[in-house]
Image (cartoon, rainbow, N blue to C red; front, side, top):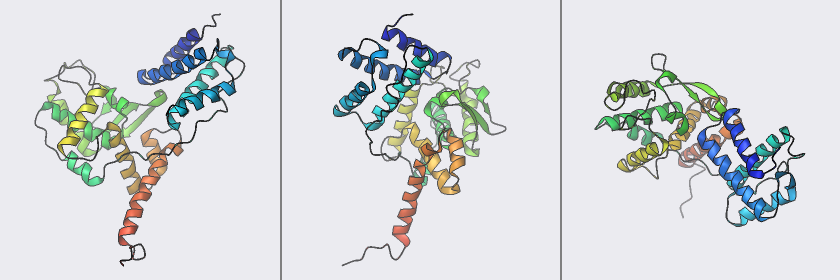
Length: 301
């Protein structure tokens, strides 16, 4: 059996695509991270994957950290390497996983960007001036209504939606499917878009959101369109699609206090991922406290 490192890398990526059914974007990240580690091995004179040891993996992590790579990025690369070696172990190409006990340097946990309720209301109260803006408003309403990831939104087909029952079926990370509710205003925006969509796309086109040429709208185009809406309404920073997902989560948690329900709606495998939104909730409580509690007011000199 071939022992060429590149051969095993390609086999692993094929495994991720066919057996684990990961998305094209996820595969691209795996390829990039593992290819960079392979370059490190080649520069260090490590000929085969079985020759890489734990000390060398730590050397790699320290090297890229000195070059300025953040802790989260290093952790992602180490996670990719651990998954790769678990595959090599399964294929009996190696006898141990050298990345098993290696951890990345800790980095400050950055809270996700969100819009406040007033900014969201201002954005979603916009009137569409043409068919593309009608589509954009449907995108904005759906992302904020259901907390979709950008990739989930791009992949949506009309068969995934039941506007009568007000639900949408999405396929998230790890090919996991979940059913999400759609809000009343999002339903209205989607119906308005659907009535006009035939001006741009053929009736046989399955995609919910299409561009001016009738093809499925891509992630980059959605990012650009949302940035334009942010500039038009003077919203703080760039309006990234994920900002709407984060806003959905923090507003829902603030209103309900049900962390487990928010976890299910977001499609997080681990509740610790969802718990970052409790920090956002606490920030809101802290602001209210500072503004209202008599013992929190600054003493004027």
